[in-house]
Amino acid sequence: MVYSEKVKVSKDQFAEVLYRWLSKFLTDKAIKKSAKDLGFKLRRKNYSKVFGELFVLYMWLIVYTCEDVLEDENKRNECLDIFHHLVYKRHTEGTEEDFGKWLKSVGAKYIEYYKAMETDHPSGPLWVVASLVNKKLFGKIKEDAWLQLRIVGYVESFVKYLRKAIKQYDIE
Image (cartoon, rainbow, N blue to C red; front, side, top):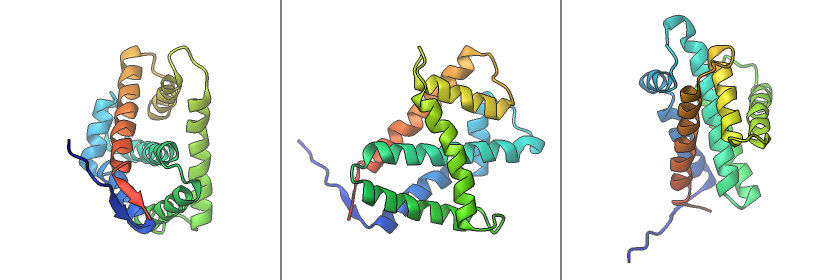
């Protein structure tokens, strides 16, 4: 039986891992693929809207997954704070006034996803998250069960593989 040892990393290194995870989903090619996978016809005029919605969704999924996997709350929060600083410094490119205001606006968007996850729905909370993504991308909920299922699957897959990746690290 083979036992794999966890990789020991600092909080800064782990935050960098999270940042790189996010970044691989924010390339032009990845955004176009995600939009297509989610049934959204991406055009030049709506690219920035789609990018913005997926950007926040992916960041929230990273935070949500870390909260689920990392038991040490202080260590987790420190890593997520470093992660958010990295994202702010590398992705906002000076378009936001300051880190605090940016984080507050991002946090307000996270709250929508957290509320969706707390909603009691017969199809489960991910259905409600998918409805929120659906509404944010299309401007209103597109009544399409297959679209909803694709979004649910997309979110589940993101979290599943990120959870597996996070568990490979021992944060010092």
